[in-house]
Amino acid sequence: MNNNFFDIARTNMVNNQILPNGVKDSDLIDSFDLIKKELFVPEVEEEIVYSDSDIKLAPNRFMMRTFMLAKMFDHCGFSKNDSILVIGCLTGYSMAILSNLVSYVFGVENNKKLVDHANETLSKIGCLNCSVFFRSNLIAGNSKNSPYDKIFIEGSIKSLPKILVKQLKEDGEIYTVLKDDDYIGEFVRGQKVGSLISFTKLFNTNLSELEDFINHDNGYENDS
Image (cartoon, rainbow, N blue to C red; front, side, top):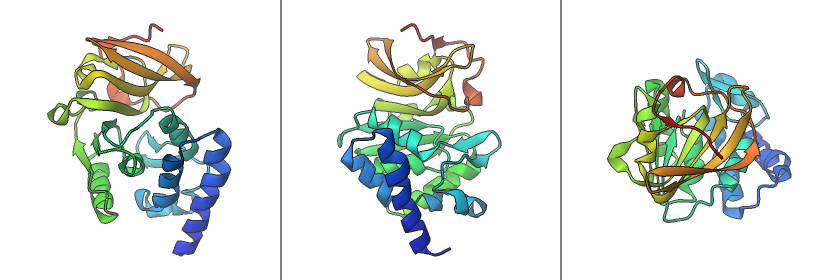
């Protein structure tokens, strides 16, 4: 497959998947049109990289469908001065998208091969405002570079660990999918007020649950 194939497929992805889902932010749309998603997936998955399909990157880890990532990011209100933390960033595709929208993007991932792939690819395409770190447990986040304006968890959780709340600036925001015991997912915005988080439900959706967040005992339940 040549570059022309991917360029056409990427344009079709924007026109047929992202725009029909109501994404309005023009800079966000332009970033999806610019970033070569094929660089962030295994060669065996290149044929379906721009389709509306699940792309497996590691055991029990899948790249989020692009239209859903775009819809979520459209609700996040990113600004050029933002410092962002992406938790469970996989090969860094979501970070590359954000690199055109914010000041700096930090990512954490618990798979060393994915971390290496992410840093190599992000450097190769000139995303110099992105850094990915290995963490054996994603719950730890990345305190070294905190506090952040926004944290984005790339997967679903049942409750929010307090350690991540501490890594947000006052009035900072955290975005994730909260699932209840019936496995009904809600994409939510959590705003930090003092040491507490106030959740606002944005829309219904379901994502694979991040295993590191299962059975931790220091979280904030979704009480909104």
